[in-house]
Image (cartoon, rainbow, N blue to C red; front, side, top):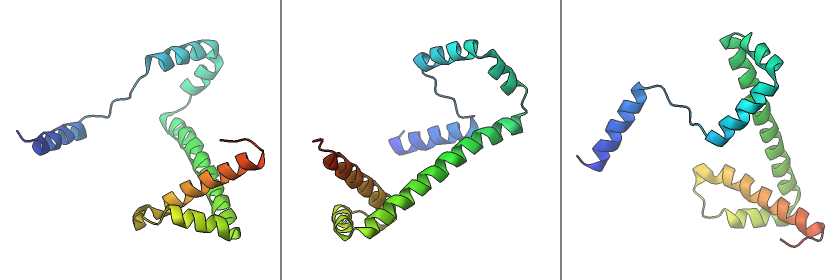
Length: 125
């Protein structure tokens, strides 16, 4: 069977199964200790419905996403205020395809911001 067909068959089979949670034995061991030390917290979460648990999980993800978006907007505003930085960022991403340009712009801007912060503190990278 050609590789392309094997991959398609595997994807079809995986699509029928529930995705399996990847487990790391070291993290599982730390988690078990944490659970053992926080029985009241475990009791609290056990008392929540599935919908409440999902909403609690999604709230954390939403807050992280909002923080990331806000930080990215601050970085873009900083770049727009500094034409020399903007030119460096544009130079770095000149060969990036248009569909990846926004993410590449932010990544390059963050890198330049970090480098500038390190240099202004007198630390050599």
